[in-house]
Image (cartoon, each protein chain N blue to C red):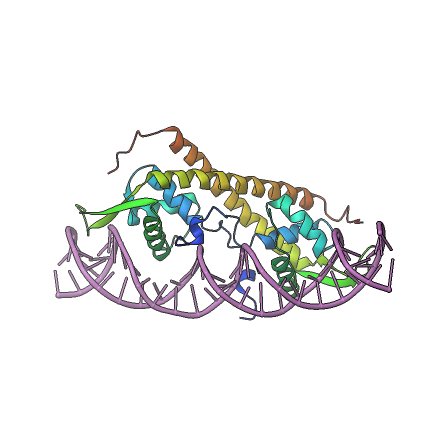
Length: 127
Length: 127
DNA sequence: CTGGGTAAATGCACCCTACACATACCTCGC
DNA sequence: GCGAGGTATGTGTAGGGTGCATTTACCCAG
């Protein structure tokens, strides 16, 4: 109510993390939205949002990172199958590099946090 | 130009990551904004934004996570010194738990990425 | 023929972020 | 004593991502 959602609870996946995840999944092989949706939790997206994902896919298609075409399904409605482009693969590499940095930063945060948590009240002197 | 900034370049620190960073730095000892600003890069904030940080500090103060008071500096203008509250410490713990999960998710992403990158064109079969 | 799983998409409000800009203090050198 | 530059804290604002609700449509099983 009075407190902003930033105080509601640690939300925290990286910004735009959905994009590299989709690119990675597509790098493992062509797929369609609904299938990708089910694989997202394995990469950290606990409750993946269909809306956002479809938007993200279409956006990346407009940017030339992925291609898509309609394909009939033997078991259900037709699906739009996505495939990675050369440019999309390059973006994946760039993202991976960036995420490696973030991973490192989080590692430093966590070790520093652990150190601070293990040192209850001491060392509170400061210039 | 025509491409949205999401395509500009992997930006990617976790959402609201600034908050836990400030809480951690304050857990190591009371400090003031300008000083915190200089320590943020060590936690991953390459080009820390003063505006955002001061806003974040004030917001957390309103939520009771930090306290502040004015203090004279021997070398410059007066500074607002911040200190962690009990509630702020609890939030830090919560954030750390959440960030540990994110760290793990990124780890899984990166190993999966490495595996995919090492397997050039093979295994593209899919149901 | 109706319910439920499959499949894709839009609308929208909220808020975070990045960037620019403003203000004021203090010290040092000229 | 005056201006430059470092210290220190703030405000304004545009733009975009996220989460949530809602819609449409296909297909098969009961």
